[in-house]
Amino acid sequence: MEDTLALPDAWRRQVHPRRGGTVVRPFAADPQAPERAGRMLAERQARVSAVLAAPSTTDDVRAAATRWQAGEADPLGAAAVAVITGQGGVGPTAADMWISGHGLRFAALAAVAAATLLIIDDQAPRGLSGTPFADPGIRRRRPGDPRPEYEPALPGLLRVRAAFAAASDPTPTRSSPRWPATGPVTTCTSVPPVRC
Image (cartoon, rainbow, N blue to C red; front, side, top):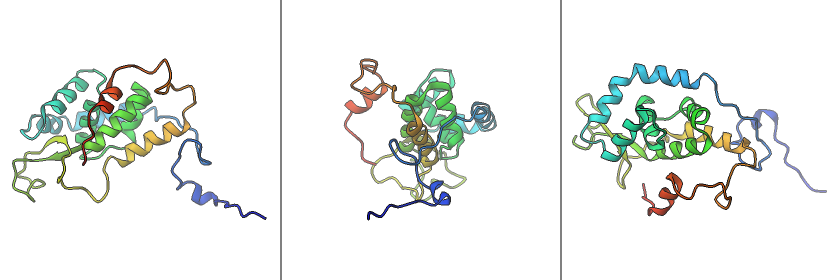
């Protein structure tokens, strides 16, 4: 006789959904997410502008965030604005907004980009970057940067993961003729990886 693990229903809610897994719940992006994200951005627009204008903000992140705010679909810009408005983290609201407004591929690129970003004041002495005297900017993480105990981008990443787990199979893959030959994914994979 073979033993079979039977998960109690209370435990099933704690299992992270994965493609091909036994616990894949239907996914629907929150229809209120774009409105909620817009309100959060309106409330924190002064902070977004200040962080983007700070000397520690790198030019590529500043340009991408500016393009996103101007209405272009830029995953790095979307990630930067979400990290700033989320005060360092990206939650399910941003992920749902990206999924419903730009699709699952865009949301995945933005969620991964958010995990590489850090709000920090490179001009402040070490240990004082979180003080009221700091002028934090946003840039990609570098080796030696402080790492939080809890990854602030994780809630957004998990939301995108749940959407991927529930996605239908006709989504184009790299071997599919519908997969774009160039674009952010090709660019991301052609650049040597940065260790954070």
